Length: 404
Image (cartoon, rainbow, N blue to C red):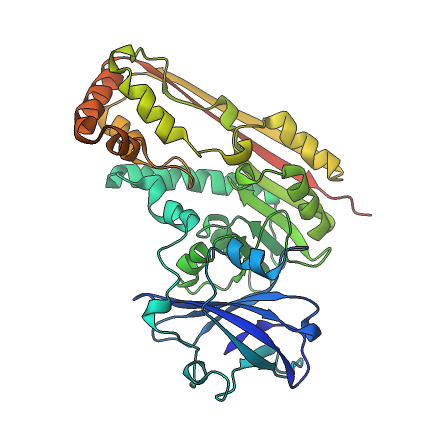
């Protein structure tokens, strides 16, 4: 089982927790290994692709100060086996680390080739982050709406990468990489001798675009405890991920730590405190059902106030306080007042606004049950007959670490 780069001594032993998911299109294993020679716990992720050799992802040092159980919990998977392992010698000629499982300790796991567990030991469905990225945010969209979303995402991607001023040979860290919107294009731009590290808290999201066979280093990790050495990357990029981080100053400080002198940050974040969708329409005729559905729909949508409790000035302040020499921010607000076609209204009701939320349609069916369809039809009718207000508010931030 080849799992990536890392120091080790021949014969060094430790304990490995294996966490496995088997699916028709992709099998992957997540392991947590604690070996003294590795200078602390390490999380290991290995992908096995149909018809290919196992795909090495990377060594993942656990979040700083975070223990074994919490690290496993953060990955959203459960422990299914623990076995004693051995670590092979790692040299410049053979940079991969091999974990061996002796037959006598765990026969089912010691077969030649990638480690496997029965299907009953599966991790389960994709975590909420991957599920939202792959399905939830475009739930109920037609093909035209899916293309429009993709076009808008590419527009934001190109502005973020333009702010990063990428050139061939640089080392880029994409924090909150999701399914690879920034990372894949960044990899093309940095050329053969550059490197892109895609980091996300969701191993399912990383698995989703690892199957595309693009030369990226994939790491599961948290923005507030980046599993990278000091001064190890030239550029940090991010899109709509800092919004989910409660301690944004700590994340900015981590970005500063891993950047080399003169390194740059380029990111985009929505400013949800100003966001509006289909607003300023009199919907009193739909009460009290409307309020009941809204209460369910919005419950848990912004845990800890991370998503709505900041604005553009807060973002600038966090990066200044993190030690960046220069911080620039472009604030973009788009205000619309118009009648919205019924297909767009339906799309807004069927999509899930963020990974923590169900759709308005799902909330309506949960709360109103037999009267949900009537309520939704009345709501769509009201919103299409009268003008409504929509406000999109976002910030593009660029920051640079001092050269020395």
